[in-house]
Image 1 (cartoon, rainbow, N blue to C red):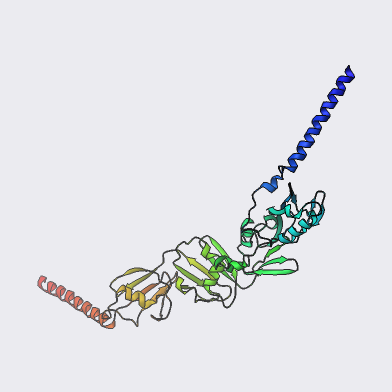
Image 2 (cartoon, helix red, strand yellow):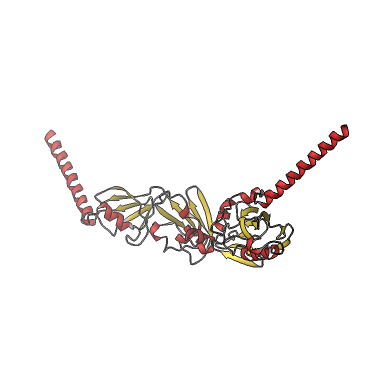
Length: 387
């Protein structure tokens, strides 16, 4: 009796297992077999991926073989394995080429007209970044990642980076990208798409003849070139992408030369010597005017103005003031400078003195003598009468 019950139990278990196998086979035949979770994730791409997309390790393909569904991943050696069909190398081939190769392989077992291949998930790969970047080393990126986005992913570039010649080593070729023109002038042609195996090198600025640029709370340097203007250095330093603090003027300090100031409008025409310091000032600057003018006091500094402009703004009267005697007091220990009122530059903090004309000086002297004689005569009359 015990053996009979044991036989019945084993029979039921075998029948149940057979039903499970049959149902799994039927489910697979009906196209509801589970796929990889990775393959079901949404694919991200900058633009539609066409048949020219080059497959590589990590790409996921969906295969529909008659009523069978299969998700396969391209292996590190570039191959995929299809059950009961074999292996085929698709790495390095375009999607169109790989599709034909896969269909040729599976057509030995399935009807070709009922087989389809599609790309469902893009690969990820590592890219090396070296040089003047914030994060040196290998970085994981998605396919269809452009250079500009990759540089943002690694924290950007360093202030002393030479962004005019970013090098991308691709196989035996070297691609040169002017990252400055790409980012400031919108040269999208240079914002290339990175590929698997790319190595990116951002060179440093060579030590030597540089131009130092000083912004509020920030200082950087740009490699000197004779044909560059102050505006070029400003763009290369990324000044157009910084917060605009309301620059009033530009101070240029060239080696072995006194500082000079230029307005912002002259940056495109102004060239400087090597090892010059260019400072963008945001402070209110004044020039002081005194003497024979209608309006004594201070005037806002204008880099393009000369002494004649400040004097004219102060309302000089040529009957009382004189042009040829104008003096400029400058420095911590002011010394009178004899400057050309129409050519020599005026610096912030200068005091412009407009002396009186000879006629006014003589008139003042005669009035003084007259007043003095009046006092003396009055004193003499009082003395005589008192005595």
